[in-house]
Image 1 (cartoon, rainbow, N blue to C red):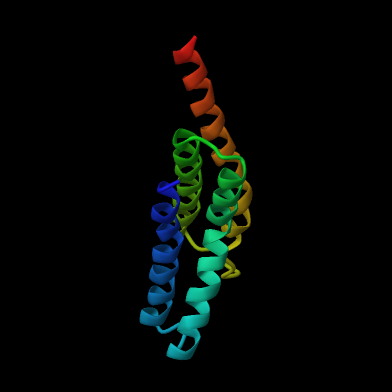
Image 2 (image 1 turned 180 degrees about the vertical axis):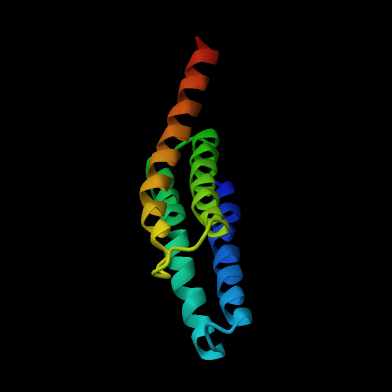
Length: 123
């Protein structure tokens, strides 16, 4: 359970970086920085918060908690790396529609994998 606060810093740092980038590029002003940061943390952190809640609720092992957070972090990295590709002509960041579903899928895959590995080692 000590892992949870450490992993919750990831969406906070990512939200700060995105809001700072928007402020530096001049796309937003200083007044909207706090709003960008707050809503960014809520958006990027939703899978982290839900995973934390479920892991505490089901009293999961540290291995399952860690594996789920790795899957969610991988989803954040994969989706955010799409910024490196050519931009959509409409200017809409449509790839973010896939962040939550991908984080659920990867989180469950990593948790399932950790459970399978543990059962295989114990048998």
